[in-house]
Image (cartoon, rainbow, N blue to C red):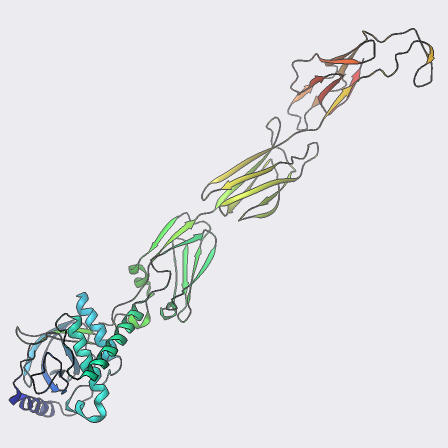
Length: 489
């Protein structure tokens, strides 16, 4: 409770008024005070005649306060931050002033800013506050003062007038809502945003507060951040060569870039006044003075590569094949040259590869391949093309003897028989694979035989066991013969 003697308050007020007239004459508020320093002050206290349960036994209720800087003539409306402590009014008092850093004091400064200074920045308290026309302004001061004390944990009083108490409750709710609104950050604050390297992503703030933040266009470590004041979006572009997978944007970083809510910028106009022991400390808050920033993390998906290799059965690189590739970072056809092709810097994910066409001398591979591309890695897929092969069979279609004609109607068989007849298969030229990296047969190499029974059915047999050709005898056939010219003897 303020311990002010009722009989001399008018005397003190009158002395202050006389001192102001004598020393300064009529001056207008300047409010240039900021930062820290030391000065001589003349204090003034004015009755409001609004009582709480803390000061119900006093004549004047809550007191309104101001300070005057003797050297600069600055006149400041201030608020008491030591409930129940007096101040020597009408005399010169020396005191230090500085920007408060205590979180509770800073919270009280926010109350003072929204409750008073944001609405009445140029008004300096004097006796005129009790004029009937000033009732709403006086309520703003009194409610702000009581809420400051409550914020500092120095009072839990109620206004004696119940209607004033109801107004005060509404006032507090409004101030708390304004503070909460000012402290509200973008919806993506304290989240992790996933961005692919080489891509641009625009994030919209569903809290609709990003528009209040100052503009930035900053590029660090291959990551560009763009925001225009008045817009509710943040655009993040990650260079395709970025190798970072995680990146943290802190509050300090955003503050250093100037990306804060513009109204919360630090102007050092929250001032805490300290005087000699036993003399009331005071404060003012001309701006919000507590930069509201944002912080978030990036998870960057670096790009990967996909290498396709085209081979023949011998493992030789083969040209001329066209593949159709489909996936999150590529959809289209690619042609293999020099046996390999690499799709560089494509998005991670699952890709399917199908052979669309093949070079001369090879069979189309009809398989579908699936490959997983991972960030900062090269996924590989080798696809093999087989060369076409042939088969050769010998049959006897007419084994009759005697005077009947052959099936072709030309001559008589006579008494000839095919049983036991053997035919040999030879290479009629040097035979290679398409790439000519493998020689299957030299000219005149024997490959196999066909031996007939009495019914004219041949049994094939492979006689060349050194060839690299994958040939095989199946009944009356030799299968898997590489493309080339052959002869039978």
